[in-house]
Image 1 (tube, rainbow, N blue to C red):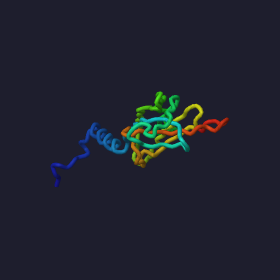
Image 2: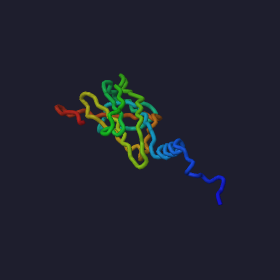
Image 3: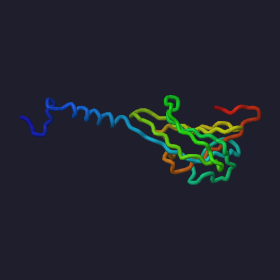
Image 4: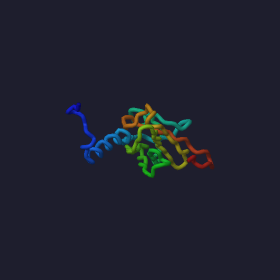
Length: 154
């Protein structure tokens, strides 16, 4: 006995198979993005970062010649976004769009460098972080001065 609602595979068209395959793949592959904005300032001690509701809430000296780079899976992808800090040390917003696949992790990196300062890297795994990734808070980066005669760290 056959039910009227049963799907007979003999009558499936190529278009329906392609649609089904597309649906399955869309469940496994996706796209995501991160947005960051913030400031680059001179660290009073050790380098570091904070997410704050406003830029540079501590009033630290800004680094106006800083360069900020944002990338996702930096070693595997040639795509990145960058910005130069303004006179008050502010930068961004920078947005990075990246592909995703179920079961894979994406490393997000924000790197800040400036002449006479050690390079600072903020890095997280997108799928595991609880840090803000949508630009809703400022990522305030603090860079440490290089030691005299020393080179900046990569």
